[in-house]
Image (cartoon, rainbow, N blue to C red; front, side, top):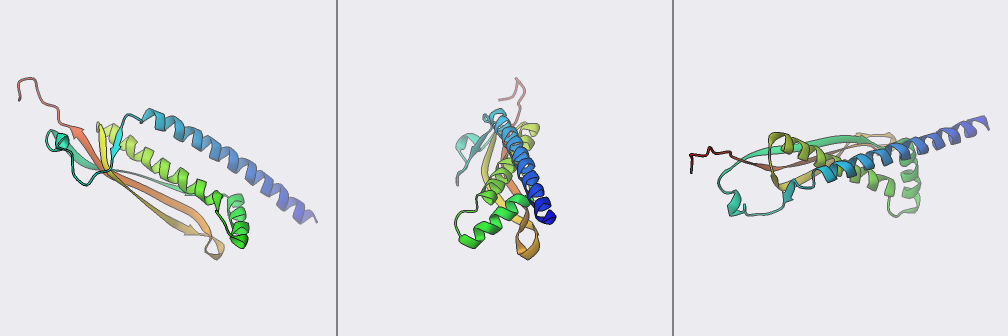
Amino acid sequence: MPDIITFLILLALGYGFGQWFERRHYRSIREREQEFKDLLIIQTKIIPSSFSSGHETFLVNGSVVISVDYFKRFVAGLRNLVGGRVTPYETLLDRARREAILRMKEEARASGADVILNVKYEMCSIYKGRRNSIGSVEALAYGTAFLPIKTTAGER
């Protein structure tokens, strides 16, 4: 009986701290998304003529590794028994994707870029827990940043 009580206490603590950290991370993501909302991301197959000259291009990327907490893994295991959406993993993947995009934008902004074209995402599980359950995921976002080339007043 004491083992069950200990398990339930640890499960409740894991749930509480996991929810607190997730809410804190989402708050940070929302604040930084507002900070970078003027840095455009454009998906296109043809580079617009306004970018064909006068811009330097370079690759920017952002990556993050996020681990799933024990409670989410426990709930996902229960969900696998009955089927349906595994929302604990959905929020994990959403946070990872959004964080990777923000890190990519931070790199672009630090380099002086004003636009990022053709952003791609990669997601992978980098750690398998027991019975091949998801332990940690990596999200990678990358794209082509455009940096306006500064010209002197006499050049045309």
